[in-house]
Length: 174
Image (tube, rainbow, N blue to C red; front, top):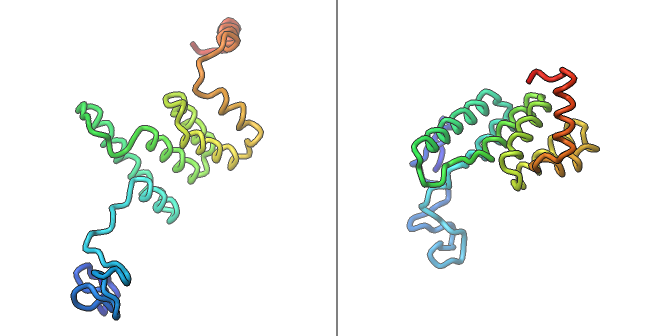
């Protein structure tokens, strides 16, 4: 990959300083005595790489499009009953949605997305880590430990009783 006089990268142009047969200066890649030259293309960026790049470059619409496309691919993958591992998991998708929400300044939405995702995947360390980051960023550091301790666990008898009392007072829409 080199560049032409217009400053545009030309993928087919040879790299500057690369001589014939994969030599750089006096070192030959074949002998292992210098920089290794590989004909293999660089690995494709992952969904997470692309999302982080879009958010870093403040391309929120691009980040939202990435998430929407990944969600559509995952839904199609699940609908087809495909046994292969999907390109993006539900955990990755939830984390991406929470990151987009945080980038737009919507901490409560990010927390809500993560609460729902952690309830679905209670042992997911990446989701719990991201919840910690979101809560720190939104000034809720004191609540981190109790929230993470409670998330993903079955309701206790006390929780159920509180819910019943709430329903009797007419404060609930249910």
